[in-house]
Image 1 (cartoon, helix red, strand yellow):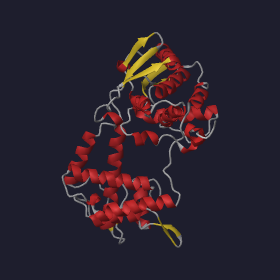
Image 2: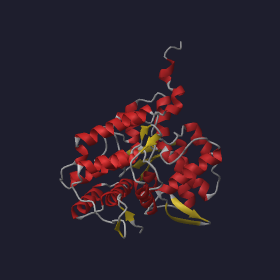
Image 3: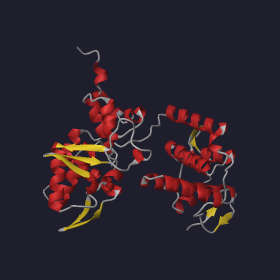
Image 4: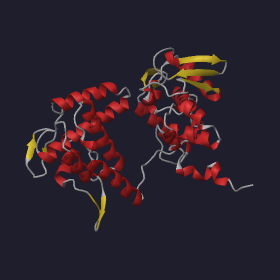
Length: 357
């Protein structure tokens, strides 16, 4: 593990702290035990490791709860870009920036995206709440700074990047690239399953199990979604955990299961020549989406989440009622669902043609 140097240039430690002090470590364990979704667990752990590395580099001592509000303010101005005479600037010392990158705590030098700053402050806030410590992230100076930072970012025209929504036509073009091989059958079934069952997240596709699948008629299944990001507090009111898979999606799923001989465990598996392996990872699901989009010549920045945003966007274009869409996706917040109705397809919004006769 690489060294971290303090802002004053003094070598602080022979290694980046792998653990926080006792109170912080206990808070981390509480958070990780509560966070059922694997992606949430990794996200919280990564954010807290970054806080530990940044703090020791900035102040020359290990982080401890409660963190002073002034330190949170310093974290924000270190990482959030702001306009100046010479363009955007931020206060993170260059030597500390390099050390954080070399230690694997930061991907590249420079400021962080606004969403990353907000997320890391939110994680630190959660750690204080779990440890029942006075929360510096609720300090007026911190909240005001974040609020002003959001406004400034918006005025500069900065927008959070989102994966391109995969509409039904794009999905069918991608499915058309899937041949009769085992990999082709798997990818066809996976794409249809993820979209038709309500725009499942890549982690939910990777976690899909045969035990949760039930045939309901000649050409259909229901899939019981037992865990996922929106299920950590139970299903949303009016939302069922049973997601229908019908028509072409059901046929593709049955074809994959029969050909691969999958009768228990994970539905979607790794495939080698003449051999079926273990469950796919969430990352592998995203790779399949990207690969099939490229083969189909569909243009956009695609990933696993493209199927989820595509399901909502397609449903909105077809005039499907929002409660029906939310029952399939499992969303609790209307604002979250509306956020998927992407600006890139705004011209297809039926509300844009209210003056047409």
